[in-house]
Length: 86
Image (tube, rainbow, N blue to C red; front, side, top):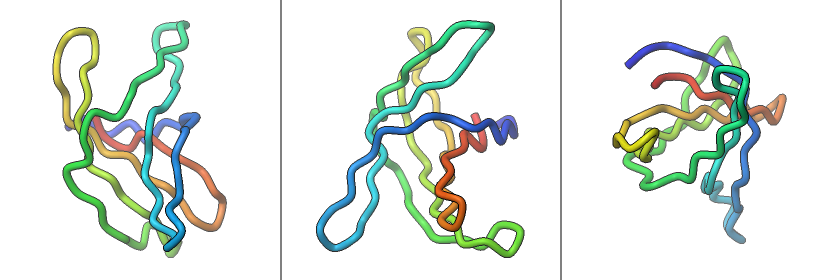
């Protein structure tokens, strides 16, 4: 996987017990806006990144006709989503 650490716009839902689930995200790619629905969440874990608590999701989706595995990160204190690896 290639390290990107690119900020993205995310639509997610939160259950009543506080579990965050990403649904789809939007990013800029070659000057165009691309919306990617989350196909499947393979793994979710809590990590510390730079001393900040993060939720890390390893997911799979179809990009341009090819299924790819990628990593999304939610940084709790700044409330930012990032496409970490693709």
